Image 1: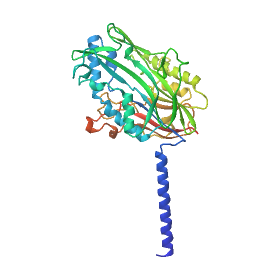
Image 2 (image 1 turned 45 degrees about the horizontal axis):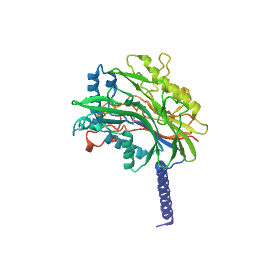
Image 3 (image 1 turned 90 degrees about the vertical axis):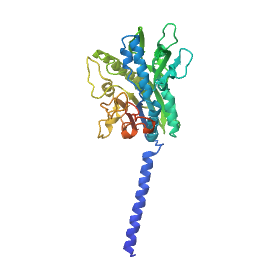
Image 4 (image 1 turned 120 degrees about the vertical axis):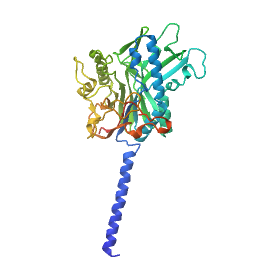
Amino acid sequence: MNTIRILQTLIISSLLFFYSVASATDHRHENHWDDRHTIKVITQNQYPGADLTPLLTASDSTAFNAALVSVLKKIADSRFHDRVQRQAAQIAKDHPHVVALQEAWRFDCTDLLSPIAGKGCNDPEIAGAFVDQLKETLSALKAQGVHYKAVASVKNLDVSDIHLPDFPPGIPFQINEIPVLLNTIDRDVILVRNDIKARAVNFKKVCPAKISFDGCNYQQVVIAQLPGPIALPIQRGFVAADVKVGDKNYRVVNTHLEVREPDPTNSLSRFYQSAQASELIATLKTTTPRGKYLLVLGDMNSSPDDIEANGMVPPYDQFVDAGYIDGWLQTYQHTPGYTCCQEEELLKPSNLYERIDFVFSRKVLKWVKDIHIVGIKPWDKTLSSTGPRLWPSDHGGVSAELRFW
């Protein structure tokens, strides 16, 4: 081999070695779990497994009982245990520092007579509905080899607020003529990786009359009139955690605002989500300390396409007008980033049609390393070995990696 050929070989070998090292370094950087220069977050609406609207529109107690049994059957059929495995797999893959969960429900059932095998709460048609979604989520994450702690939570709707004569708190109903009692709570929760320092923000001075777990319930809430008549507040709220990643301090907020029109026959019912957004923005303005990078995550039930109506400014516009940065718009995207909503049964082909789940920043971002929608590809569905393949949730989640300096 002549000298020139030897030099060429050495040069090519050196270049290949350099490329392989550089590629490995890039790969490690892309997947390094302790990147101290950015903060990684995911926001995910978990979805209970059924549309709860029929419960709010039932005309009498008989119709309400039938609607409730139907809803519980759908929740059982949605197999949260299988769905959360897929949610946890996505979280484990992206391995964020912080996860904001909305609709982390807990459903409990109590037999009002002596328990009978296969009857009442144990009726196979509804038994699968009674789960603690937060507990299942933490267990599924642990099974994936990643460890998170629930740092802060806010309790929203709570049916133990219902007190009927001669019954314990909750909703009494019958399943196949057996009387049982339903209790359920809806929570928004902030999970933080075990290796990250974090603590819940104390909002007691902000909302002493509306404090809920670690967060606050909003002042303006819809009151549902159930048969009876029973008045049930459809509470919504917000919660926050102070998180330290590297030497940077963040305040991460999680919320789930009211739907656009809780009363579809009354456009003025948009007032609720508009008022809730205003309350949150005002609260964060007066309570967020200097030196903390503020992130607001959640299901806003408001799209960039919403327009002002009857003097009510949509939540998305309120956040933008207050100086919040929409993380999705900080990078070039070849898709519109729709996150909502799959069909109720989670079986049909993807039918997402609007973007209502967000990662907002109060300060200008230096750059967004990555932001993408999770849980919306066919391979994200539950495994065929567990039954019909279901979407992990009716919402896609938003995963983002952000840098502020």
